[in-house]
Length: 410
Image (cartoon, rainbow, N blue to C red; front, side, top):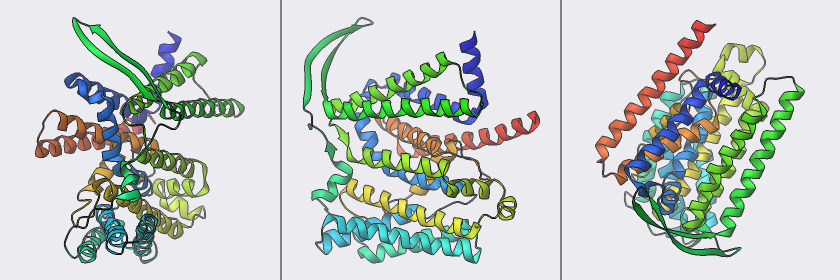
């Protein structure tokens, strides 16, 4: 009963985060039951490759939303930075890294442009980025001359389509027949050792981090979960992560984009949770007047928030153009809505001051899983948009209900 009680207390203490995890697991199970191929190694690899740029955008967007702003221009910035990279690499025949560098520089300039109008002129971010949506889309057409430009090929293409594998060899244990519910399945046990090793290192790192975090809470006399529940949590995460790692290892190995994404998640989790800048972002979104009175340099922080968003939009632009092996004037259309939806579904508050990078990633994964699952089921695009819209509406309604519940409890 103690473990059950602790589980219930853990779930209700942060209803946003626990609820979104339960929803994510339920959605995965739902599509896995409807289509067994959903959890196949090849399909899981495709999900990582196809939706990584949305997750990158969600990392930047959640910081913008926490500060009480919104950015409607990121889809157009994705298109513009991808177009610039294409001109540099394809039309000017320069090295792949020059295209990446050019895209990042353009993204930072775009972010500085929008940050100036928001932070120093005082125009609401909604208006500035709405103008940016039109402005940067128009610049994309001008840069490309209203035509598509392809292919990149070579190393640039491999950024979003390449894999790290075969560094430690491959284990092949052959195929075995497995019976279940009167059915017989052929199971092949073959995986890339390097990919499994990387995921194992990640699990060990997570366990060490959790142990250190628990000890720190003890030192400050903060409440912690019971030891059985603590161990259960680590084991559950380890099982899920290693299963996912084995699935990727059984397909094509470790995608480059997953390495990039993991590095960004770790870096921005530390930035938002462990730095002065991160605390100032939360302070601005939580209570602007209090932040000003506390000495927070609001203009400076807001400026760098949009510079950061422009840079991450450029990273997403590089990933998307590499994935599609070219640049198109209409690239990135509606990406901003997917990124915003990922943040709100992941627990970010509409009014600012609340949100986590991890929550935005889970929200983005929910969007990715729903899109991929519905595609496997043959659901048409209009119906997919309807479902996504309803999910976003429910997520925001849950946020409003949760705030009212907290207010009544107070």
